[in-house]
Image 1: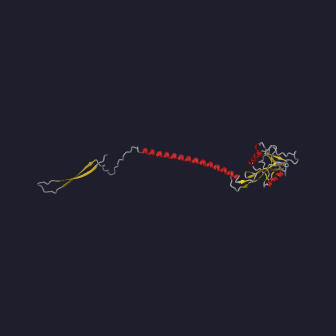
Image 2: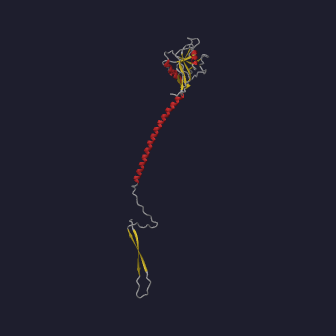
Image 3: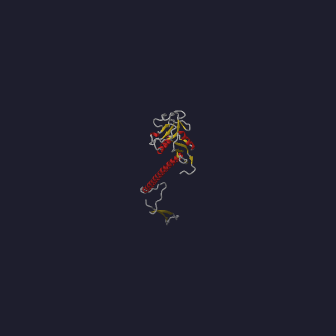
Length: 262
């Protein structure tokens, strides 16, 4: 509805006096005149509802598109951030794995050292002699160096020694004494520290021990090891007469290094 302006005006009329009749008090009559001008909106009647302008819905479309664009940008940023975090986590995991491996190595050989001509492995020092002596004399030489003939406590230790001897042997009979003997009681094998041989951890060459007596009537009561060409499943222990001269493997604990490990 078009806007309208309301204005008011008052008009007075006076009744004329009669010639013959008594004079009467003048009576005034007032009329009100209302005019409308299309300049202002008409007054709202009490209780009526003003009609709201209809919306064509066009103004909502740009707003929805803007909101959708913002959400898309945020999702893309979140995806990129998650990708970066995942990549960083992978790098961190790899570094932690490397650190764990290094820590394990340090646990095995934590800043330890051996005397000259001794080799460090698994927290122990090993000496591989170049001269040959009978078993008893060989043991005394090891003791003089604050060690003893080697006692093999694990498959890993046997593997280390077997591979070392391949490098050090010059011929097939160039074998090394270890600290195992049954000289006290035949068939009862003891290590030099007095502990019995663990039958679940032995590395006898096929056919040994056989206590062969043709070379020595006392039999074969001491153990030597080594095969220059290598053996199947690390089995290279052989019993031999304790009087036979052979090279030796001495063993002792490594000492703590006071210098920085490199």
